[in-house]
Image (cartoon, rainbow over all chains, first blue to last red; front, side, top):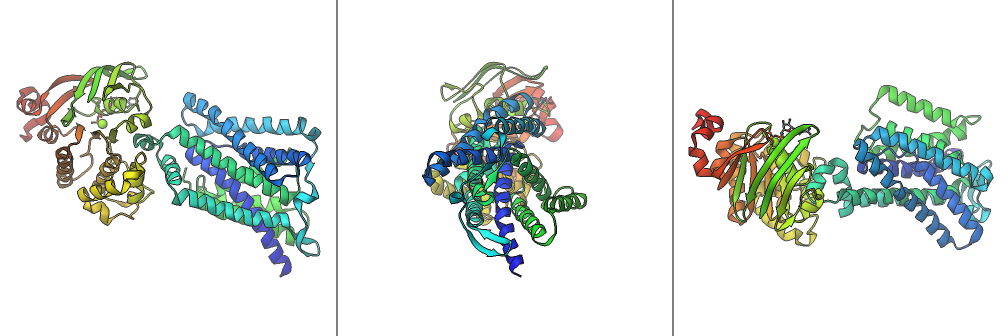
Amino acid sequence: MEVFIAQLLNGLSLGSMYVLLVLGFNLMLLVAKIIQFAYPHLVVLSMYVCWGMLKYTSNVFLVILASIGSCIAINIATEPIFRLLAKRHGLDINVSFVVSMSMTLVITDIMSHLLNYGFPIAFPSKWIGKSVIGFGLITFSSGQAYALFGGIAAVLAFFYLLYRTRQGRVLRAISENSLLSSIIGIPTIKTRVISYAIAGLLGGLTAIMLSKMLGSASPALGDFVGMKIIATSIVAGLGNLKGGLVCGLLLGITESMAIGYLPGSWSNAISFMMMLIVMLIKPEGLFGIKA
Amino acid sequence: MLRVEDIFVSYGPIKALENININVNAGETVALIGANGAGKTTLLKAIMGIQKVSAGKIIFLGEEITNVGTDKIANRGLGLIPEGHLVFSTMTVLENLQLGSYNNPNCFNDNLESVFESFPILHKRINQIAGTLSGGEQQMLSIARSLMAKPKLIIVDEPSLGLAPKVIGEIFNILRGLNKKGYTILLAEQKAKKALEFVDRAYVMEIGKIVLHGPAQELISNPKVHNAYLGSKI
Ligand SMILES: Nc1ncnc2c1ncn2[C@@H]1O[C@H](COP(=O)(O)OP(=O)(O)OP(=O)(O)O)[C@@H](O)[C@H]1O
Ligand SMILES: [Mg+2]
């Protein structure tokens, strides 16, 4: 029972990280009509920023500000690229997919050539914190507690923004019908940029929490997380935010349970098998496509 | 108020509008009539900055708005009610109206009150998801949403499309009421008889050109218009 509870907590904290990334990914898909495959890579890049900042300062506030700020800034910096493409190709999701794929290669290259000589980075133990509860081999660390509570708070704030505020209404309007939105006077480009900023904010928060939770990062982490984020989004139904919420949590829990109860590290294989089965049964995703 | 001067629009190699001149004065109701594919919607899109104009000028309230962004044109006081009663179908009636007042959220409550006065049915359905409204109700919501921005000129594209005759009558009554309240209206409509009964003046379009224009009464009695657009229904 202790193992179950500990793994459930682990799963929820890991899952809430997936949820944040799936939400940011889907927000850009819905509002800006792009597949930003490089989004998780940008998040890993902000983990590097966080790591780099920790070397120079012990001011936690500054570290957090720099990590989140860099994620927002770099994410917004990609917007003109996608806008230029949209000008030439129309809002073609496939084109954005190809281009963001090449962005992942560039970002991964930067991390593996220029940062820490390509070696994985490890966050200082002061940053990660002590374990809160431990049951033999299974522990729940303070990093995971940050991820769990921070993740829940960020997800709630995101849904509040989207469904209870004027800005959220405008984002939903553009996502449903951007031409009609501009006809009623909503500036579409500005609103798209805002969606990049919000996704960047979610990504930056995730980077902070991931650094505390995982304690390390490597150039390959972006590809690894990216695969899961896009697969989860498709399994949930592209553009389906509530579906992304459920499936992100499910993925985290499945992986944790597999780690807790199965020998060896089969957690990835198991989650991808489950996704395969879902796609065979429900090609439009568990909750339906909304993009 | 609105002046369109010698504009040309093409879809790739296809010329959709040639040498179009129209003007709308404050307080007037003006119609564009013409068969399917005459170019009415294209002209309205060009005015709203949705379709690129290749030559000519569009002037609204003394300022040129040719090829200016659609949102900017809307914010200058042009309220387009597009073809096919378009609403934000996943959102509630209230949310649609809130979006309509994007640019003057401060007058939201006053505007909402006056809109509900003209459309009591929307008041009753305030929390209903717009996509589940009937076609007529969606058309009313579409009009109401544009009124929330207090536009200086209302442009209505084919408000009768897909609606039952009784509902069409209601919609035209609403438009008439709006004109009495001081709104200037430019209407594109295939149903020439309905349109000519409603407006002060009209332009007749045929394959991308304006072939006739004049006061509605004159056009109704013009034999050419009569044969081509009013048919045996009179
Ligand atoms: N996006 C487009 N690409 C190419 N041709 C178009 C496009 N939109 C409209 N057209 C063409 O332009 C012409 C004018 O179309 P438009 O929609 O303006 O007509 P309309 O007068 O509004 O007709 P209706 O009464 O059926 O709404 C038509 O021949 C149409 O096929
Ligand atoms: Mg039309």
